[in-house]
Length: 381
Image (tube, rainbow, N blue to C red; front, side, top):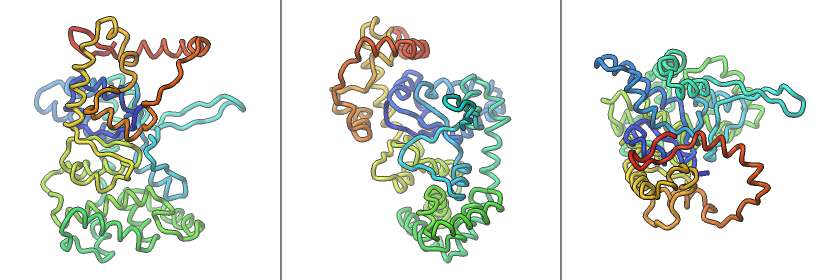
């Protein structure tokens, strides 16, 4: 239960472990590959500074949501699947990284882990170096392999001059005009350049598009169109100096916006995200400045730390199944009101028979439950 939330490294890094417990409790969190890429880059940075790399990354790993989180597929894989005719939901649902293989006519399904799911499993086991070696480096290399000059040339080939752009809002309008009104085969080619994908996909994608009735790119492959919209916006904003060119991190930061369709709430403490993300959100989504949510989580830590010890020992899942219902100033409660409108409705208590059926599952959840202690606040039980 809880809204789906996409977060970046800057927000999670700002939290205490106590605050991260309640972030985990009150949101279903989307773990995108970029979070691993950003965080594991600290392995090399720490080594250069003479620190133990695993310790530095471990500080962040201790705050990563565990109970209500899941890794999502990479934007590249999703966009390619979309281009060849497969649907990609863009309504705030988390797209989990994992595939199913039926092994029994009626019941048996074996889920094969994707690279994202395998990386997340190793991350939870604190095997950071192996995640970096096998996964994060590949994702980072794929991101850096994008030929930005070729992408910029492709944008200019459509007659767009970034120098004419006067604001970020206008950059979005220019990008939207290109994606909506140009030759779809040409747009498919440009998307594949942005994705640094195998050019052989282009022929199949164009054939599938023709078979669909030659609709617009947004109608045929809405997620691929979203990625192109964000990337063209980025190119125009860079060319017009609406986005600074001095920070290398801007290239990575803008790619977080590729994952916006898969959340209800985007939380970040990054100024680039603060300026750009709201331009790409649906009306039913929220951007939350990370420091605002951190302050609210700090208030929740203080509120629940004041509970009697016997209540805290039950664990967060028991004493805080929902955010406060009696605090009009609580940001988390307000986000629940916006994105989970029925959460305040009274629900009938479980029957004794249902409790007995659920007890084995509840026992397993209690073993993994995070709790509060009088001495240190929120810890992992």
